[in-house]
Image (cartoon, rainbow, N blue to C red; front, top):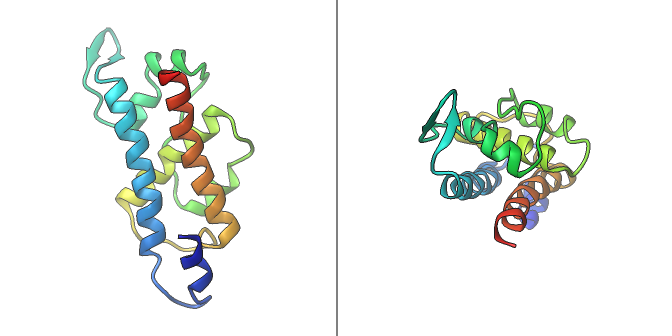
Length: 140
C-alpha cells in the first residue's frame, strides 16, 4: 500500500486501495471485538451489539481497557481524524479506528491530505495499535 501512495500522482489516481486497506483494518478490529463481546450491557439488559460505537462504549470494554469518557466513532472526514491523533493510547487507537471504519464504510467520497504517505501511515498505525491492544489485553 505504501508503494501505491508513492506511485499515485498528485492530481489523480484512485484512492480505492487506500480506502479499502483502512476499511478492512477497521473491520478486523470490529470483528475481533464482536467475537470477544457477543453481548454487551445497554441499560439493564445484555444485548447483541449493533454498532462498533455501542461495543466501544459498553461497560465491558471500558472496564477491560480502562477507558474513561466517550469513545466517539463519528467524524466528517479523515483529515479531522488525523488532527485528533495526539498520542498512542488505547483510547486514541480505538477512537481513530472506529472513525476510520465508519467513514470508509459509509461514505467513499474523500478529500484532503489523508493519502499522503505520512498521514496514511499515522492512520494505519492507529488501526494496528487498536488491533494489537485488543490481542494483548484479551489473549495474553
